[in-house]
View 1 (cartoon, rainbow, N blue to C red):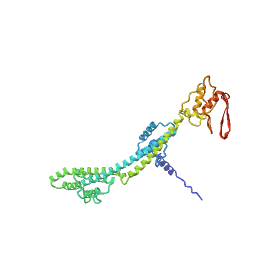
View 2: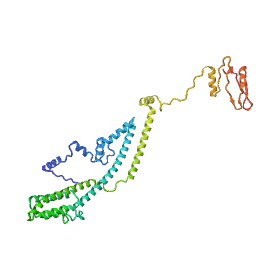
View 3: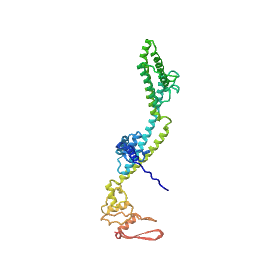
View 4: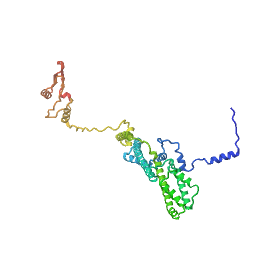
Length: 385
């Protein structure tokens, strides 16, 4: 496949270089910042703070209010680490979404009411301008044509020409065409007066001419005021036309708010759990010491059971063992005391208390009959000690 090479003349090169200097893009920092956002669609994953602020400004939101909301949550929740800070930020984002959802709904409701009011005022204004039954129609010239910014400019230009002809006291051949372009066959109330006084202004009767000289500029000025007011109402309606049509039902808004509230509640519960677990570990230094010491979990709580005081002497030890109900060895009794022998139970029952005391005092062995008729020797107390 052959490739054709075209020679470029010096004039073409100069023209290309000259055109390239005209399309270098924005040069100011503000312009560069604006074009940097051209590829952004919704900004949901924007990370840079300045990008997020500009996106919020485009949507009519206040970045300062958003940042203040997050700061208030941080001051209130006091996150202890990065994980808790992420949860607090998520709670703030959900709260901001809920706030903007309700605000957007209220703005649309307000905008719809304002649009209805603007249209009502336009209809009232048109009823005052036109004769009864003469509401603007397509056959009524520029004043009755479809609304557009150019329409009002042309009407004002024609009225300026009428004012100029009045000041020059001349009626050129263009006069019928200007009146037809303004009103067609159905002029407004002010247009009827302008037509009548303009014809009278060029009559031969001096008195009528003088009267027309006084009245004609008043009606031209009145028609200008009406046109300017109509243009103002038109631009007001045009600005509110985005609110035309059905909006989001309030039931849908409430359902979405409920979802956001549940998410905020779940994240708040998560934050409290994280704080509770962190409080068990204590401070970071304590946790580090526990990890270095080989402790796998938080320190065990101290027992709330009161410790029994240490028994003093043979009587105290014996009494402690008797209260616990455990059999064990007994200290030698002191002179003049007969210690109480702990109960010894088996399948046949307990030894009688009287027999045990006799056996201890005489120092002889006592036998008891166990299960099956076998005898089990019980050593004397001296051998037990």
